[in-house]
Length: 153
Image 1: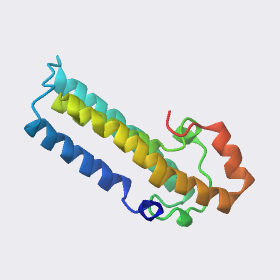
Image 2: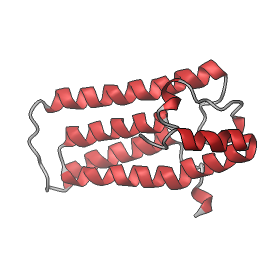
Image 3: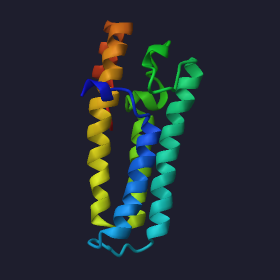
Image 4: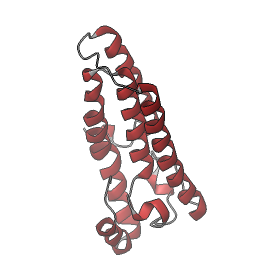
């Protein structure tokens, strides 16, 4: 399964899973859950995700390093300030919030399946390969950072 490592950009995965949620919600009838203030909760959850992801992009730009998740070799610095002091993957956490907002909006139990799929896929095929490459590139400094900040939250 190594051939899947760093192949699907996280933003593309987010789009695929979000679209699949809407397809499932349309064709799989269980789980039409009534959620009071659904639109407001959806928008707030999505905005939280966007802000978290943009904070990650901001820190990367500040350090002049790449935001391209399919090319971690292009990383020129360990970013451990700002949002990166709380999570090693704020952009991916932000995408998870955006995916959660789509779950809330569809209000369908089947849509919930997309969240563990996203986390499992990202851990195995995106984050672990990135971390391996960054440990090789930055050595003990990155290994120390792995101990300081959590992978997700």
